[in-house]
Image 1 (spheres, one colour):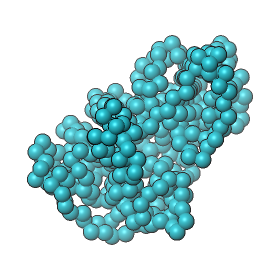
Image 2 (cartoon, one colour):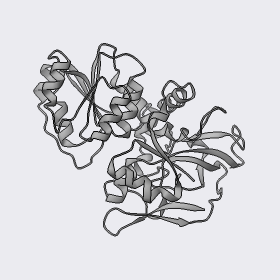
Image 3 (tube, rainbow, N blue to C red):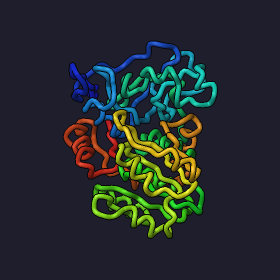
Length: 346
């Protein structure tokens, strides 16, 4: 079968090469063979190639995927062949301290490197073998092309739940990349006082406006602090969601938050170091929160949102491409930042 395989350089990063590999086989009794129906391209894949995120050498990438069961191990009793499933690529142990405290997204075992599509073979291929614990059964009527986006949607759901947005809040999302647009779409389900998007890329700003942002601001061309203060009657933002994770964006957030506000950090950059004034947090009773991937509940919420069509995920999909075009079209558009989500079809 054709697969997109990561080949690591001696130092950091590496390249993805399309090559023919053997169809994987079930080796453990709790495993399931999935025929992949769709797999989303994630910005993490670009970070892996540039050395900004670790991955195992000669691993089939692709961690946002869904499919149909073709074979099952003898221990698997509650699923059957032909079932539609979404895959949680982040394999957790279920018994470490964090898992048992309800923080499965912070699993100590997962932190050592277990993710399918990064550290174990993933969804940029026709077939993939995963354990039963990674699978969520989907409704029969689920559109399997959009089912690949349950994973990033679950990240957005987790962030939304941590932010605890109220209808009277002024909300700012910094960054209108795929995750920013997903969070924006999720927030639009219920009314807000103002939903403001900050983004330097004009294509993404336009897309955000199309998806219903109340205000869009390009901080490289506009006085963003002045604009936000005008919009919020000089109060500032009650909730700021930073989907970028750079030092600059974190410091930008601290210039526009209201008294009692929250900054929710979603974007990641392991090298970013930002300044902060502790007194500004104490004196004005502010909060800084982290949002890391999702829990099982968030994943179930993502499935529910899609199956009940509470969110129109098709508006986030810019292109569907065959796997063979992932290098020439998929990653090129991602680097050019002229797309939202791209779905590969094996």
